[in-house]
Amino acid sequence: MPIIAVINRKGGSGKSTLATHLAGHCANTGLRAMLGDTDRQQSTQAWLRARAAQALPNALPIVGWAIDPKNSLRPPVGVTHVVLDTPGGTRGFELAKVVSYADAVLIPVCQSMFDREAAAECYAELKTLPRVANGRCKVAAIGMRLDGRTKAGELLAQWAAALELPFIGVLRETQTYVRCVELGLTVFDLPASQAAVDRAQWRPILDWLEPVLRPVQAAPEAAALKPTRPCAVPDTRRSSLVAERVEPAARPRPRRPEPGSPSRLPLGILEAAPRRGVAQRLGEWLRTWPMRQPRRA
Image (cartoon, rainbow, N blue to C red; front, top):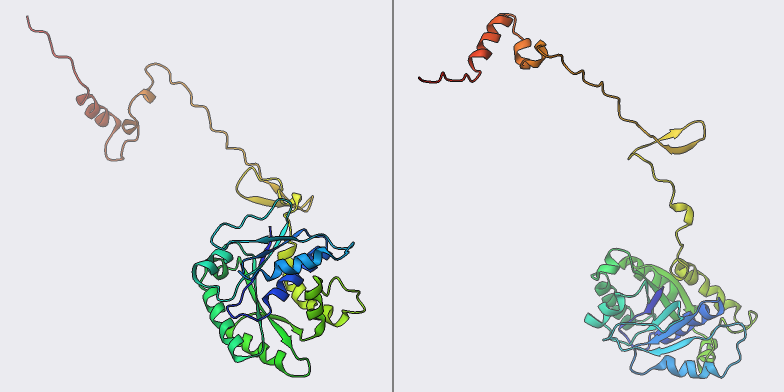
């Protein structure tokens, strides 16, 4: 089950806006998503209540769930995708607990020194966690509430490049997001003509998340015929790998020696050295043979 966590230690960085829109994208693309809220303010729960009053025939319902970060994450039955909205100041054990379940972490960042410093500290701690260090949990940053008339996006991209933090997109500052949040909607619920610019900004973000949202399943053909031997050789007649079946070499059946034949003697006697004759070696062997002592009268 893919789990995406939205994390930033600084409050007001746009975590709830990003999380609700990710859940809205899943709902509009046929994915049964849960919007988990680990924040004490429970901002996303209010958004879900407003969304329940909307008529959205093209979107699946989004399951809401208030999660205690100190307990194990157990999504409800029927959920296939999870989006977690985390509180500000998440660090230490709580951060490690969330990342231990997450497949991707998104860090929303605004263009201010305070936001950049908080995001940099959060990313530094994330890199020390095993799932992030071994690549099982992907991490990326997203610029939030940026003015398109400025170079804020370029500056954030340079900042992220210096940290070696993937920077996958920017979302502009617009009243569209404000109105959507108040109504329990997302830009994916609006008509395309009303949210064309915003959906275009989401495209690189969704492209980066696509392998997480829809992981490629192993094809049944992957379980190919296993070779009968460890090695396989190409069959030029069929242009495919076939198993090389190597039969053990037939060993000659030993002949049963005739009674009294020399072959019943020790092998060393017959393999006489050039300087020592067979008779000499036979005599040496007879001297070592145990003899029965004569019986006394």
